Length: 254
Image (cartoon, rainbow, N blue to C red; front, side, top):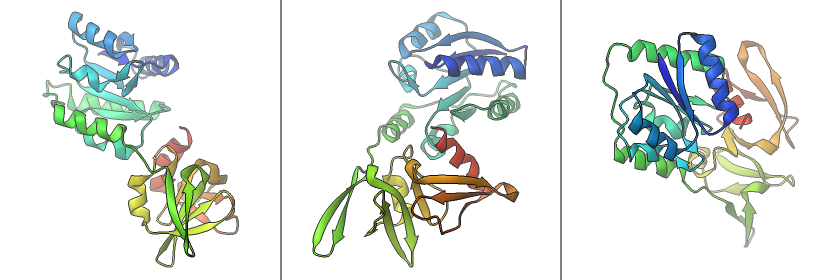
């Protein structure tokens, strides 16, 4: 198999190369490319690879800009630091995606998926312009930077960088600030997921959306569950179920 790596972070690119050779020494890494411009030039001059590893954000723009300049007819594994929800829209148009930091287990799984689906001359799905525009909008989406809170007959502005976490209680939704105050807000946790920057906030269970700054001690329990101590809430037992653990750890590593 001939693979092409399009990634502007040198350490990430070298890790992918090293892991590929570990997984299958017969894999040939044709080249490592670090920009949109160089990728376009490469595709116009070289024989096609069997598989492309493509980071979303490159030194000179989004890798999706490549699709607007050359026709890509190869299976692609996207590489991204974005959370899973942000890349579901194009998962069906690629072999798979890898969240940074890249693990050997995830890479093995992606290679296995490629071998199952794209080694029998299967047609590669086309990545159309409508889909590219939709993905770009998601990546460049603006998120809430503050919340306007009613306090008696006054209105108070709370910046998101002052918020430790959001939580639900008795059919109400509250935000909790770094100075240990709670404020009721007119949002549900479900609606907040779309309004908050996923790099800064993460929903850990049905009751909590937390920021990195709120995380205290993390304890591994039987059954692969986690127990998280949140600042200012040390007296409450807060758990992360097994099916949410992987996404939580990926978010912490960003």
